[in-house]
Length: 59
Image (tube, rainbow, N blue to C red; front, side, top):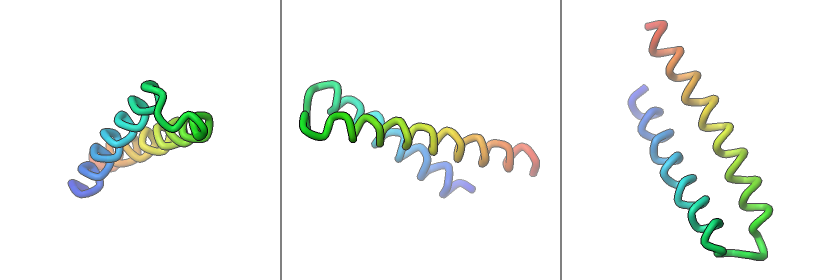
């Protein structure tokens, strides 16, 4: 469980970094695709976080 939580936290940090880079105008030609990827990653991480939270609560 701790490994999964640590992985989710690291991916959240990576997601924040990606969003910051997009906002600064990096990779203009890929901006729309990267923004869509960032949103999907955010949704996935939210679901994973909720899953592991509920699994921890049930223990």
